[in-house]
Amino acid sequence: VIENKVFVTHGGIPVDPVSMDAIKKIKRGCEPPDNGLMSDLLWSDPQPFPGKSPSKRGVGFAFGPDITDAFLEKNGLELLVRSHEVKEEGYLVEHGG
Image 1 (tube, rainbow, N blue to C red):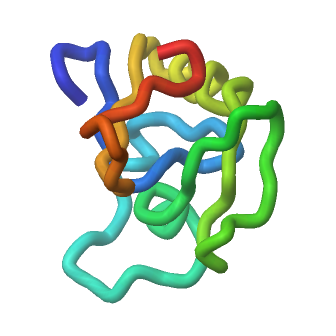
Image 2: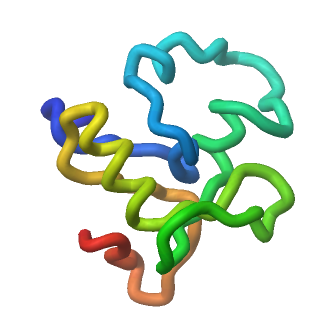
C-alpha cells in the first residue's frame, strides 16, 4: 500500500472484499495454493462488466468494477494497481482508473 491510498498487487483482488489485515496475515514463502486469498491476489484479472466470472487461467477469478469499488471502499483506498499482464501501450486504465 502506497501512502494509504494505492494498493499494488501482482494479479488482482478477491471477489469478496477482505481487509488489509487479512492480506497481511497471508503466509508467504510457500507454494501458492490453487484457490483462496493468495491465489486471488496472484492470478485474478479485471473484466469490464460487473460481478465475477471464472478465470481464463483456471485459477483466481475475473472481477468487475463493482468488486474493485467494494474492495477500495472497504479498505479506505483510492486506486488499485496490478502488474500481472503485459499491455501494448505499457499500461491500461480499467474500472474507472
